[in-house]
Picture 1: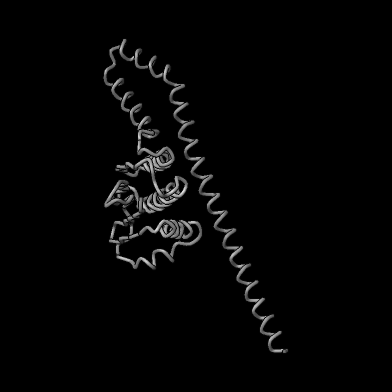
Picture 2: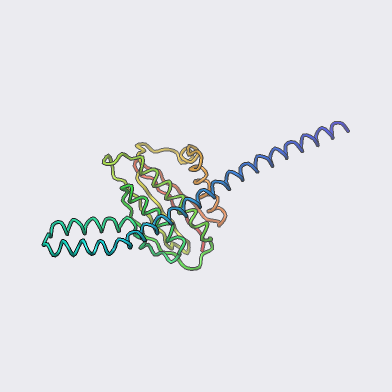
Length: 237
């Protein structure tokens, strides 16, 4: 009888420990998700604020251009227009994927990357009806691009090209997401090592991608070569 009581007490203790650990993990994951959503909201808000400021300055720009034209200063005018074009490119929200949420997250991340002198090539088109929710789709793409931007920022400017390539579209009746980026890694590393070496929010981000793909019976493939890292995500429609 005493053995049964001791066994029951031990079992209850183990179960309570598991519940406490799970509660702590869920809390950390919830905090991480909240921080990501806040970051993404702030990024998008920043873009729209910048656009409103640019539009507010529109009349001032027109007056400056007319003045340079009237004075015949063609070189100064050309330089002024070039600077305006660069400024407008940095806040461009011309990405149209067919999904409003994805438009916003891609536009914000691409804008951030270009402001950090990272060359970005983006092709994205998605159908209106998706099995994956907009929130989860944005979480996957947002985490992929956060990691890609971070990897590029570690490359000393001028030492090697900084680039991110994004492709989102249909492939074999599935939603195909591909993000590849430059890295400063000179040697191939095991993918398991790369995932486990990412600590804190980055580790949660990688695991978040895997968990979401698993939730929708999808597939994640990572390719690690010297100087480049690529991730492919396949999600059933």
